[in-house]
Length: 263
Image (cartoon, rainbow, N blue to C red; front, side, top):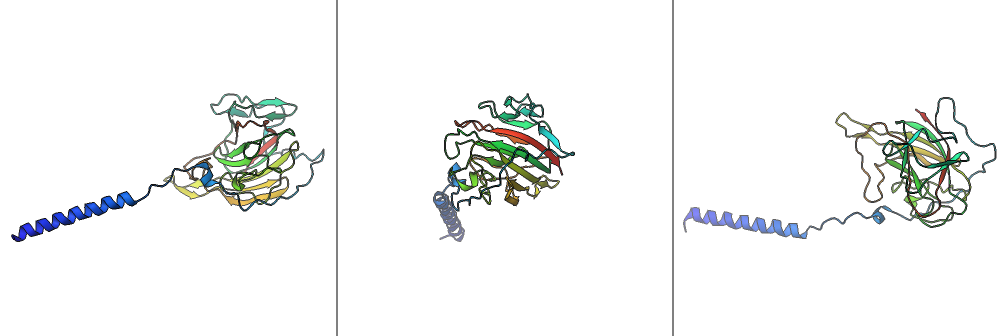
């Protein structure tokens, strides 16, 4: 046989064989499953319960002199809806309440690093269970959710209960007060930093004190907090504090005495 023809046939056979192996390999590689909300939930270990101290009639913490008051019991002038229009949640008797269907509200002012004081309460006649029980959320810089939920004798996935960095880190303790009583979050937040090329330099972190109990201790935030999917960072600057209208069927949650200090 002509030597050149032999080499040509051998080369052709090798190419065909390689193509067959490549096609076979492509057929054998499984496609990753589509992310579902349940994939990022975990129920164990269950968060231990601790009984917080009592709130007395004179125990409210008023804003320090260098704070920006976000709600003083009068109006929502410091807040807008997502489109920048006046917030439509209901103000009555010194508190404001989620208006279901009105959408999230957010601060007019944008923030980086801050200390935030905020008080919230689910009504005494709360109904529902799991995530459908007084669900709301405090979004730091508008994208990293600290969960608000009634978990007083109400079980849900650990990284989705009150005080969790949603779908990331559960609280160290469950320090909930019963429905009808006020809960207090004191939040110390350090914003993420980004490089000149807009890639992440270091992540955000947060410390949260719930009713006098440390429940997040300089916790690293792994990225945004989606309902389904994994967290990731995208470049951003200062952002608002956002409160969630979750739209669950239970009685709406209320907020009061909100102030923030830039640090």
